[in-house]
Image 1 (tube, rainbow, N blue to C red):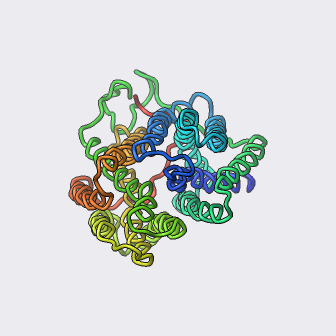
Image 2: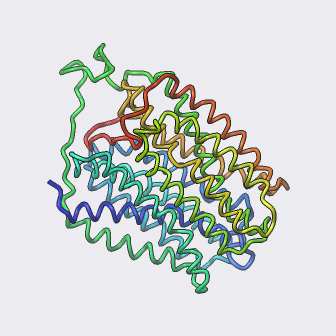
Image 3: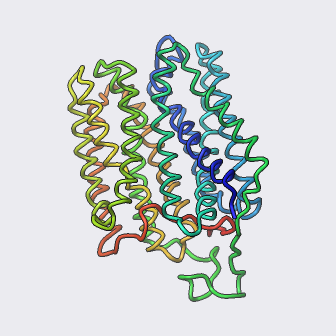
Length: 422
């Protein structure tokens, strides 16, 4: 039985992880400002490449690491990686005008953040499910809402600290929170029941594997690549809003950094609220219909963002709010549909989908930079992103064609001892 201290700590960790995750995109105008880091668009995009690589690796290896070392150690390792990331960002501030030193520090910082995200978030989901066996769906929804609240708070906190002339207050704030979390977590057991997978040639074959083949021998089923493609496109679309909105609003549309931060805050807030909303109404509005609708709503949002006039703060914030609603339920529903359809690799679906989501994140985070340096306006790239969202909408009918809505919008995590297939 989990203690209240364990439950509160897990929820607090989700909130802090959300803030840490969006710290770098929220500070985009600092990284590109001439009187700060003065990064080019390509350099700004490049700093997210190590984050993507490490997040993918951690997502794919997380279940094996948990099975070998235990969930608590993996969770603590994730917090330490987050702490290293924020510490490196603070150190880079001291040398920010010297790109020869500052740029490698930023690369190392985002690499640590990717590892922290990939290790911490799946473990938090597993702990939450284990701590609330009678109300798993509600507990996972709350956890993800807290993670989303953190992503919404990051740009708001950046705006506050920039207004105070102390933007490094955000990473410093996160450092303090992470240190407290580590000290508290070290004293808690975080014990959950593990599940052993059957050995080759012994015991009962795994579900969806009637021939008794080992998971290592089983091939990835062809339908998985449809889910992978959808997740990649979604990662691209989400990152266009999350990483490039502030630069678009300040550089091209003449808005203040405060308004740009507000737009990003609203985007992440609506992503979170949308997930809660669609989970609450799925009995009346099936999740399958939500899955078909949202990509086309996102396409409309991209076209609106591309057509925004200069000096229109209210319309700009509303456009990114619409984009947040379009993004909201797509990623968790992709994992939920995948886990129900791909029973033979259920242990690897979540990690695989998240890995391809991170790939899409990397394409948008890095790929847009060289396009901007080549003279292509962000408005044109946002307009082209509408086409990506339409393709995603078409894929939604392949993923969910003639399938019932999943039992829960947010997928249930596997127990800590379950090793994903290679």
